[in-house]
Length: 129
Image 1: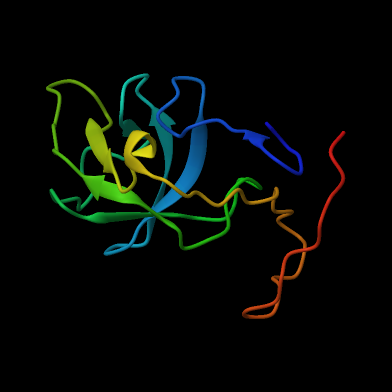
Image 2 (image 1 turned 90 degrees about the horizontal axis):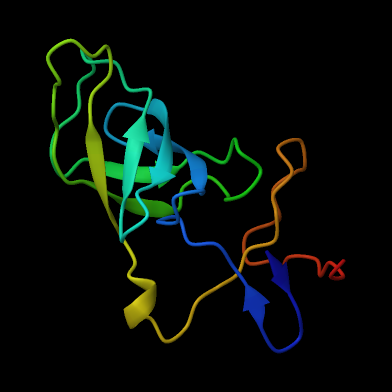
């Protein structure tokens, strides 16, 4: 990923190689969202005994150094409890469809140990490598 004055190269969360730390808002359970290679994502590492419901809100956790905490990622599309698996199968319907958006914001990487910018303060510019 890179950003310049007139454009940016980005990776969609739906990309099969993309993943980010998330929180299930209702229960504060942490997990990982990994792109499904189509237009959604799947949550990983949520135990089969976890309290998860269809339409639960999924937000970014801010722990991965990619996305700031609290961005709406999407909602749980289904809850599947595979017979012998220790983990739930949780497809996520993403909040945004990049094919239908006319404007997007590109966030610079977030350092987990860096202080959060003041509310409304512009983020510092970083030169492209």
